Image 1 (cartoon, rainbow, N blue to C red):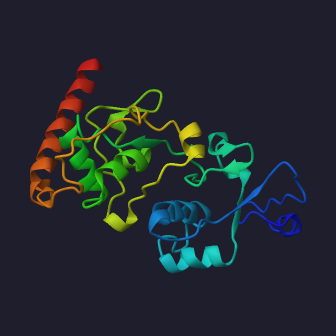
Image 2: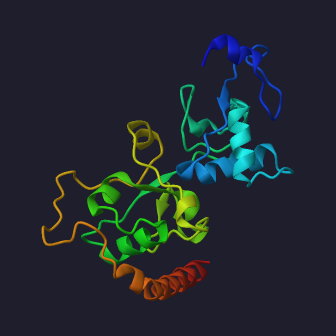
Amino acid sequence: MNSRKENTRTCCLCGSSPCKDPSINLYRFPKPGTQNAMRCELWAKYCYPNEDWSSPQFQNEMYAKHKMLCSKHFESTCFIEKKLFRTAVPGFKCAVLHAFPNPTTECGKFHTWVVNAGLVGEDYDYIYLNRRICRLHFENIYHYPKNRLSKFAIPTLHLPDCDRFELSPTTKDEESSLAASPLPPSSLQLPSSRPTHVPFVINILEPLLQIVNNLKLLLVTAQAHDVQ
């Protein structure tokens, strides 16, 4: 961004400007789209809670008008130096991204994540090695210390439809800072007999998988109660 333009712009929420306070930086409203749907909503709701923040038209208008937020509204964990992570949401700690379960050793769990994420039909290897799911999509009962997830964790939150599910291909910046679940050695070879794509039958099994998920949820809740 041109420094002269940045110095003439102000934060749409608090009015701060780099011209008056050189310690802050401005960040443009995220570009609306399928991959940014949830993030755009959270930015719009944070900045304009009394407006029609969930409307795609309103979000497009915010982007078109170059609306900006200053660095005061983001947690320090959302930055590397002055660079804002593309998953950053104002008012929240930067979202942790989690890798998909191993499709070879945790086939059932992997299938459930794939179905819930709306990724049926994508290549197994690509999903496992490149896709990540934001921590915000998991209930709190699955959250463990140090950004870990319960082994029973299933993404169920903020999934009104597949197009609005926020999935992120991995980048070097994200892997070094967002504490995504570690991957096994890259030399992992999946059996050649395994189909390249998720079988269509997975759609038929979805109701059964949901029952299994509910039973696992009850088990985790009972375990948490025993600990208390």
